[in-house]
Amino acid sequence: MTVGVIGLGYVGLPLAVAFAEAGEDVIAVDLDERKIAAIDAGTSYIEDIASERLQAVLPRIEAWTHFAPLARADAIFICVPTPLTPNREPDLEPLVGAGRALGHVVQRGQLVVLESTTYPGTTRERLLPLLERRGLKVGDGINLAFSPERVDPGRTDFTMRNTPKVVGGVTEECTRRAVEVYSRICDCVVPVSGPEVAEMTKLLENIFRSVNIALVNELSMLSDRMGVDIWEVVDAASTKPYGFMRFEPGPGMGGHCLPVDPFYLTWRAREFHMSTEFIELAGKVNQQMPYYCAERVERALNDARKSVNASRILILGASYKGGVGDIRESPALRIMEVLKGRGAIISYNDPYVPELAEIDLRSVPLDDIAGYDAVVLVTAHPGIDYAAVHAQATTLVDLRGVTRKLGLSEPQPELAGTA
Ligand SMILES: NC(=O)c1ccc[n+]([C@@H]2O[C@H](COP(=O)([O-])OP(=O)(O)OC[C@H]3O[C@@H](n4cnc5c(N)ncnc54)[C@H](O)[C@@H]3O)[C@@H](O)[C@H]2O)c1
Image 1: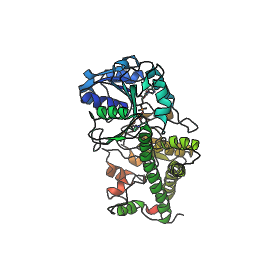
Image 2: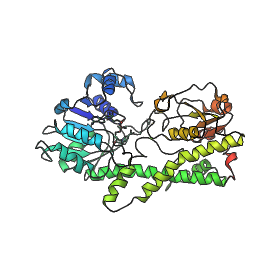
Image 3: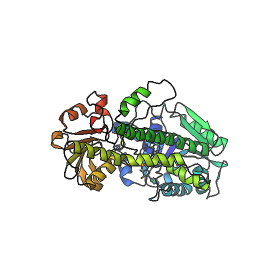
Image 4: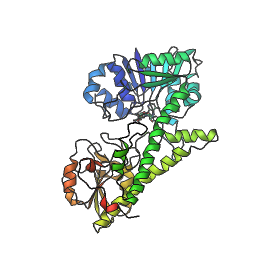
């Protein structure tokens, strides 16, 4: 079988490699010439795919910046970005662009699957007409389905192979074809009645996380005022064997998914005269977190009789989560911006993010921890000796509870009773 993958980012490259590892030939397409050159050179730019793994399957992957070779594929997967516009409305430009280009080359007998996260209705209302422009019909000539990507970057226990894959085709035959193709790389495929169910499933999963993260973050702000240790509360609640799911307090939400996807549904809901209160509220609480975290740094400095202004502050971790270099929507960037705006001299360390070109900073080595007025642990990466950081820092603000888990810090005594 020959598989086409459009959009070779965090979702598309692992998918292309998975099919190649399953013995299929892969036609990989991306508009970004640098990605195509990197693939051709066997150099991976995604943490979850080691270059050696890519090199091992390279003979089965051909990479292109144009769509014509996709005419030879049996199944084509679209994995392009689905961002928001500056007004926080769905930006379907990349998806429509890919659909339009694919519409020129799509062939009778092909299966097309959209994997990009989007609002219910996108596959049928926006993608389908672009594929049918040359007289081909979905359900009679070509097959079309939606299947959300559930990849959790940096995770090793749940992979593409053992994470169930939800698939909804426009027709029963579309679903059947998609289930057959995914079964080559996934142990469990879950067919649903149509693309809208599959589209909404992904949004439910993301909104569930967003709402629960917001809930624990709101309780962490309240616990801070009340002098209660939120980590101890979460640990204790997690002993309940049913009816509770653990979510970690933190500096807010980051990445491409949680801060973005739920608002696709908010936008769509307006057409149905509904406002999605949970989504808006969760977004509001989570967006507020970096500002609250900056205030915690301010208080910690105050306890040491220092001001933010002119203090040297080291941010540990610039990416939005541990073990990855993805800085999209990272709360660390907002915390840096706020503290810098108040006059702090900001440095950062992140082994996964060598530079932040937009703010003209490069990751500094961890060799002068004691020289900073405050060290702020925003994102915990594997391989860093946080015990050593704790031992050397004059003031450490741990936004992830890492030092606490190492049994190193008291539960934030400086915060108690400050309401
Ligand atoms: N990153 C994740 O963890 C994750 C998880 C689940 C779902 N998703 C969803 O998957 C989709 C892709 O996300 P990603 O993180 O892989 O994005 P990404 O930005 O890492 O990769 C997308 C790629 O698509 C390419 N591209 C853009 N427009 C194109 C076009 N018209 N034709 C061909 N290529 C084009 C870009 O150059 C880029 O390389 C999004 O909808 C996202 O919400 C992402």
